[in-house]
Image (cartoon, rainbow, N blue to C red; front, side):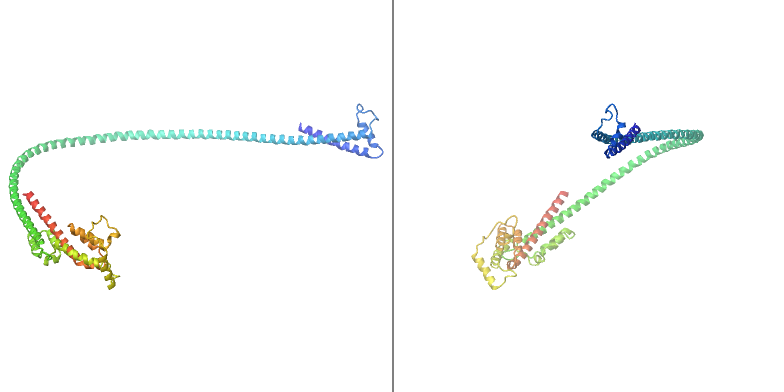
Length: 411
C-alpha cells in the first residue's frame, strides 16, 4: 500500500508540473494558454467555449492548492510510513532476539542433557569399577578377619591360662599373707603394749620436766615483774624541781632477770642514755617549769629569724604585757593555720598540762617557731625524755604482767 501511495504522489507531482506548464501558456499574450487547456476540461462541467481567463486562473489556483494539500498529505504519509517501518523493524529485531535466545537456550539444554548423559555413563562405569574393587576388598577383609579371629582365639587361650595360673598363685599368696598377718597382729599387739607403757613413762618424764620449766619461767616472770616495779619506783623518786634517781641500776636488774629475752633487751636499749645516768623529771616538775617557759615564750613571740633586733625584742615584750590572751584554751580537734599562733599554742599546751596530757602539750610546744621555740627547747627535750621513758616503762609493765599471767595459766 505504501508503494501504491508513493506512485500516486509521483503522478500528482507530475500533474502539478503539467499545471504549471499550462499556467505559463495562459499568462502569455495571445490567449493561447486557455485554448491549450480546453481539451483537458470535462465537457460535463464546463461547456465548450465558455471558460474565461479568470475561470482558468481560478481553476489553476485551485489545482495548485490541491497539489499543496496532496504534498502535505504525502509528507505526513511518508512520516507515518517511516514510523511504521521503524516499529516493524524494532518488532522484528525483538522477535529475532527472542528466537535467538530460544534457540540458544534450546541448544544449551541439549548440550546440558548430553553432558548429563555422559556424566551418568561415567558415574556408572566408576560405580562398576568401585563395586568390583569393593568385592575384592571384602573378600580380602573376610580372609583377614578369619585369620585375625584365629590369632585372637589363640591369644585368649594363652591369657586364660596365664590368668588361671595367676589366680592360683594369688590364692596361695593370700593364704600365706593371712597366716603372716595373724602372726604380725599378735606381734603388733605385744609391741603396742610395750609402746604404751613406754609412752606413759615418757609422759611422766615430760610432765616433770615441763613442770620444772614452768617453775623456772614463773620465777623469771616474777623476777621481771619485781625489776619493773623497782624501775617504776625509781620513776617516782623525783622531788620538787629535781630529777629522779638514775635508772641504770633498775635497768641492769631487768637485764639480769631476762638476759636471754630479745624483747626486753630492745626496750631497755631504747631508754634515753641521760635517763640512765641522771634520771628524768616528773610530770609535776615539768608542769611547774612550763609556766616559766610559757611566760618567756610569750615575751619573745614576735622574734624570728628575720626580726631579731633589740627594737623587736622590746615590741614583743610590750605585746606580751598589753595584749590579753587566755591562760588556757581547749584545743580543737583539727588545727587551722590561725591556730598556729604562739599565744594560742601555749594556751592549748597549758590546758593539756593541767588535764594531765603531757604528750599532747609537747606536740603543741613543738609547733612553736622562732625565738619562742628556742626558749622552749630545753623543756621540750625533757618532756620528750620523760614521755619516752614512761612509755617504755608502761610497755615493760604490761609485758611483765602478760608473762606472769601466761606462766600462771601454764601451771
